[in-house]
Length: 222
Image (cartoon, rainbow, N blue to C red; front, side, top):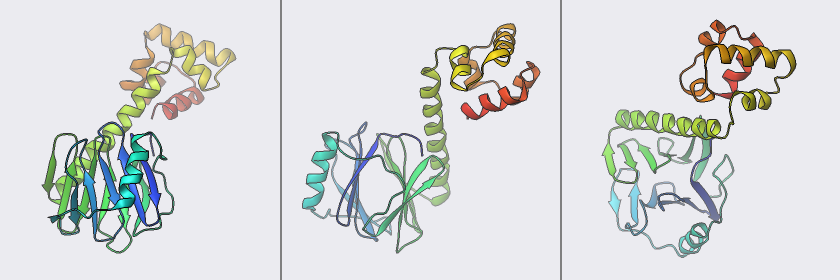
């Protein structure tokens, strides 16, 4: 999974997830419902597997965990064993929590919030909205969220590069192969930003880059 603003702490069966950018949180403990707040000052809501919103359950453990997470504590959610009724999975770049009992109930973490799926439909929570919709629409929103995470990761990787020579250095391309690649990029006036955003494998081949160099660059930038 790629880096996201989410952090997690657990206490017994309770797992608390906190998004440092939106101040939203999700509390997972029992298989048939979960609790969340969509941001700072927003009310806590309890949602069950039928997408019914009910009065929140007061959990003393959550308050302590939330204070620690707000202070910067916690680990990035990764595949790990949780003691409660939920399990964590990596679905491509997305971290998903699935109910161990109700297999169709799952929560996918996005950059801005999360998408909850259950047999009754789906719910998308982000900075602005709580949208209740059907599963097909939820899946479309999840595809958009995946694209956004991949795009952000790529932007981060490219912004850290000082240019084509730096990229070739990171890939371990040296000697004559490096000189050939540099002159090919110079001839075609290609910047490292263009490489990352709009140059495909065929165009790299047309520039006359060696197969090993093409493969290394494509692997790094995808």
